[in-house]
Length: 173
Picture 1 (tube, rainbow, N blue to C red):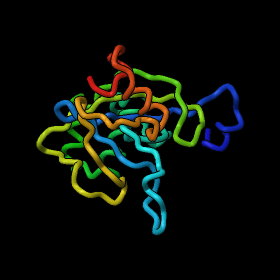
Picture 2 (spheres, rainbow, N blue to C red):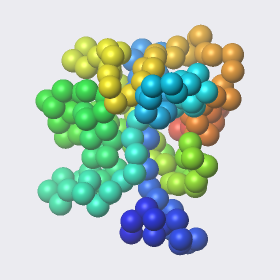
Picture 3 (cartoon, rainbow, N blue to C red):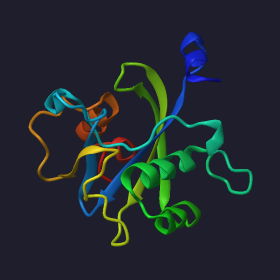
C-alpha cells in the first residue's frame, strides 16, 4: 500500500525502521527536517532514531532482511549519514544491525506507525559525527549528560530517553 492509502485505512499502520547508533555510552541524535534558509532550527524536534518507512523495494529474496526493515535502516545509514558501502554491507550481512523490539508510537508528524527499533554499535570504520547534508545537527548524547529538556524530541525518542527500566525501550543498551 502507498502511504496515502495507509492514511485512509484504519486497520493498517505503516512500518518504520528506527536505528539507534551507539558509541560507548552515547547515542547519536539529529534535528528533524530539512535545513532551509530563514528556518528556525531551534524549534524543530530532535530524534535519536535513523530510518524511515519500510518500502517494498527494501525486501531481499536472497537474504533475510527482516521483511526489509534492516535494509531500510542500512539504506538510511549509508545514503543519509554517510556510512561507507563496505561498512554498510558488513552491518547488514554480518548481523551488526540488531533488531531490538517494535512499538506503536507517533511519528514527528503525529501519525501512528509501527516502529521496529534496531541497534548499531559504531566502530572505528564509521564516524557519523562529521558534517552531513542529509541530517542537520548531528550530536552525540551522553548517558551521563542528558539535556535538561527532553520535550523537544520526537515522541518515540522522548519515550526511549526517559525509559531506564525496560532495556528494549531504553535509548541506551
